[in-house]
Amino acid sequence: MTTTMPETLQVAITRLPGHDDISLPAYQSQHAAGMDVHAAVPVDAPLVLEPGRHAMVPTGFAMAVPEGYEAQVRPRSGLAAKHGVTALNSPGTIDADYRGHVQILLINHGREPLTITRGMRIAQLVIKPVPRVTWVEVAELPATARGAGGFGHTGA
Image (cartoon, rainbow, N blue to C red; front, side, top):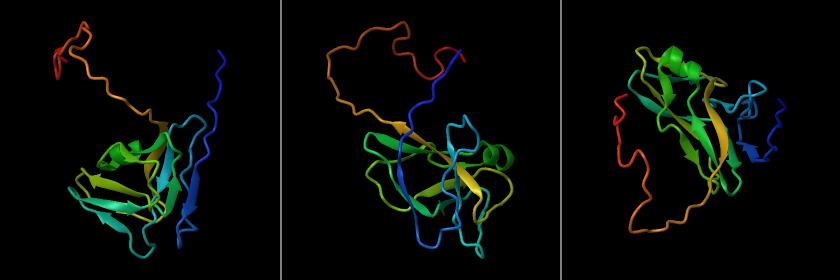
């Protein structure tokens, strides 16, 4: 079976002043879907995320997501599994018209404080296409086998 790589999308990104030492988002393996994002907290003032608390964590960059796309901020599975720390509004959306400092909203669901240090990998970033929707109001929706069955309707 042969697979083809999707075409590469170019996204403009800029390091903010004072953050030249922070890695830009990057894939950590050949087939990774998300790029790891690093914390840009001050070296001398790491962020201690206490259990049950949330905080905005700076990344040190801004970007111009192309029109028709969004950047999705997703949790890192290692932080979630080892420390109970996740992205609070997961997946978070960075819109194509946002040009400000990208910050990651993290929450600690764990039992111990987590110290976030400069350069620590804190989230993943995935760039996805977003189609525009035009609503078509109808008197009745087409029937399906499922119908209106909602939460837990299959017994699972």
